[in-house]
Image 1 (tube, rainbow, N blue to C red):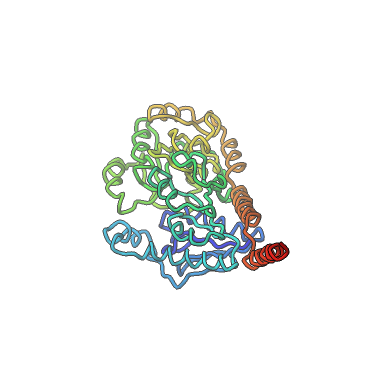
Image 2: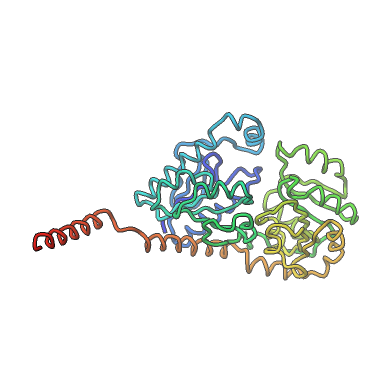
Length: 390
């Protein structure tokens, strides 16, 4: 396959280390994984984008931010609504990809954010367009998707639960996110602390995790990034409770993060939204750490209740589940992740799905214009002969 792929035209891939942005992590893994399997991948991103693929196309675009602080200054202020660079950079790059695919350079184009290309993709009906869905799809997003839908546009969900509020759009498959299980591994015997990791936002339930840890009289280690938009949440609900029992580690490098996962007695995920996947849950599981999570979003698809952790409905049940962590076998946690959420499983899933989309396009493709003209001319000659002989 010859593929063109894009995450954002205004943010380089991979993103700078202190920016928390999972779609770029997944995109890099997919692009490089498909390249290693013998496919040709051209990755579109602004200057600074670096991946091990056939080609990088920058379209002479510079990224709008080089670190989390610059990104915060851009997206967390009213300037976002007076600066058209994000939308127009994305549109410019998407148009370039679609035009070149329409001319036969690519077999399919792959986007990690559907809003970057949907309004333009309808103008290229012969180009197979694939969208990998990273966000929660609510009623408003469903309406926008349906507004710009066309037969050549296909969606890949990252969990079955992600489809809940938009069950009828043109899905091609569900492909779970994958992680490097050679990086996220088990190690020594765990210590007695609990852990949460990810963006420090109300959606992630960090406030609830702090309260649960305090009521359980357990140490809690918090790893993650705080954006300017969520600084109030950290200052009001996290910072006042920091102590030698509740520690904030900040944004960790992945190698550091692995060590904390490996030594945690349990990973808490009291999420407050319908999270479509949750990378930190499978990262912790790959390190042998049991997960206790609220029953929302894709949790039932990633956690095996009673075997790799516990699925609970509220904080009280989570407190009770913490007392049962020693009943979970850490080898079972890792085995479940390696079997279902490895990089190889993810890349194989995208490979087969995209190949299927391309093959359907080839099968259903209308005859070339020259062939159609020949057939019309032949039919007209037959009609003329019948008229002359009558």
